[in-house]
Image (cartoon, rainbow, N blue to C red; front, side):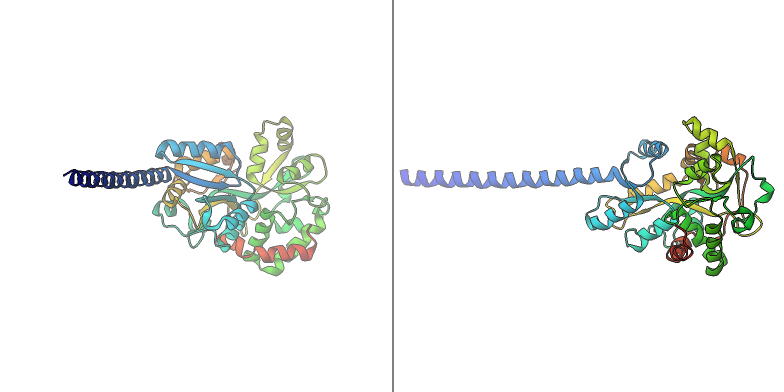
Length: 360
């Protein structure tokens, strides 16, 4: 009797342990399921952005996007080429969902390196014209900047100006200021000439500019403007948004420099003024692809495009968005009629031409 009772107690104890173990497994599974759900929720509430842009206005737009959608924008800033290298290095492990940078040439590099992916959005396609986005929808322009001529008001008459090509005339000898050939803006400018005028004419232009340089290339676009004010040259090739920012700078010296200059849109009777973009694309290994698409849709909307134009003096890509008062005061202008993908496709040849003519 005692033996039976002992066996019964052992069996009961064993059964209790078994049920307890089963209960623990279920709880653990439920806990794991909850963790996965929480991770899923966390992923649905964020988008991770690698950007070379450094403007407060961008952060304000990201905050507006978060307020509107509940999706937080995590920003990692860095130099364009460094971010491209980082994306290459991280591969599938990257947290980046979007890559945002200046110049179609850089976006082309990212695409050719296999770092971006095609996306499909009717909203984006309606907001951004064909020529300002990749043919495979791997990158999209969000802001435009024109590469124009600025000149000293007291030493140059606007009637003397006409085209980029005319800057190679003898009358401009020792008077032209422009950045280094290593600068992507100049590479894309020359790439556009290759597309519009052919390689030989593009090489002739680059050689003519070298002969007319007031000094060896140095510094950025703002430095070219400052060199005009200092009397080192009379005309320079710069991006419009730099000039706009100088006119509205917190630094009174920059304002003083800009007020001594005027802006001219070249090639209005021929091929049009060169236009480039600041743009972005969804990364190949984006973990939050849908959120990335939503952010591009928002940033290309009329609401966001107006903010870009007002805050950083960039032209909107959305044709329905108004430009800032300053940009309107400069007047409308004819743009080059080429798809900006060509700036990337012709980049290698542009660099080769610069090297051949000795553009440092």
